Amino acid sequence: MSKPVMTVFAGTNGAGKSTLTRNFNDQLGEVIDPDAIAKTINPRHPESVSPSAGREAIKRVRECIQNGKSFSIETTLAGKNAIRQMEQAKKAGFEINLYYVGLKNVEYHIERVEMRVKNGGHHIPEEDIRRRYDRSIGNLPEALKLSDRSFIFDNTSKFRLVMEVEKGKVQTISKDIPQWVKGAFLKESEKEQEHTHADESTDKREEKQTKKMKGSDLER
Image 1 (spheres, rainbow, N blue to C red):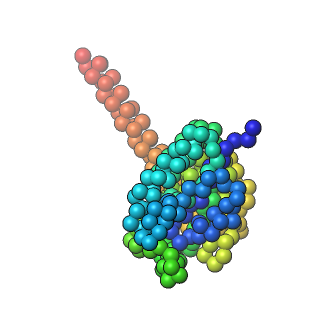
Image 2: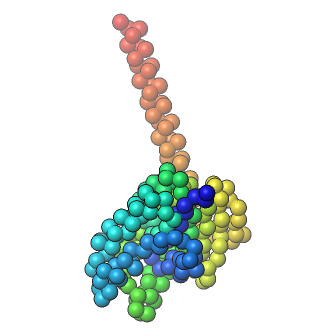
Image 3: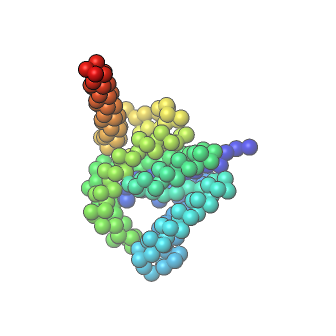
């Protein structure tokens, strides 16, 4: 019997997640999209019910995981909620597929959202996009570790697959890796170094403390 699948479409606002989602729509099980839920609740002003739509999306994800039902989500990956959902799905025996879409830099994301608004799409404040951009890229390495298969796309000019990872091993990699992708792995490397230094510092403190304790024993 095949495993249920959690499919994650991730990337900062304006990256092109929804376009990618539509290409896979018939393969995704239940499609859980907070924006679509908001439009159902309040078609005229969906942004006014975003919190309610978000809570409903979380509820539906929880139900799919509990029932072993395949589903997909769209997320900016700027927070830890999607990461927690991936962890829960993993523990419940789901296979996880990640599709991450990014653009050259945050200015491109802002421009794409502005274009979308002119065409009748929903507005996202610029400060929110800027905040989410760095956080989203910062969370990408963690999402990759949780995924069975990951596909990273650059959509600056057109959709281009730049990296494919399966069970932690890179299967495909473009000769021209965008700087934003390199930046994600550089940040992860820096985090690991910080943890290593922190561990070393802890070891040194413990060693000094042990020496002090031994010294105290000798003085008695």
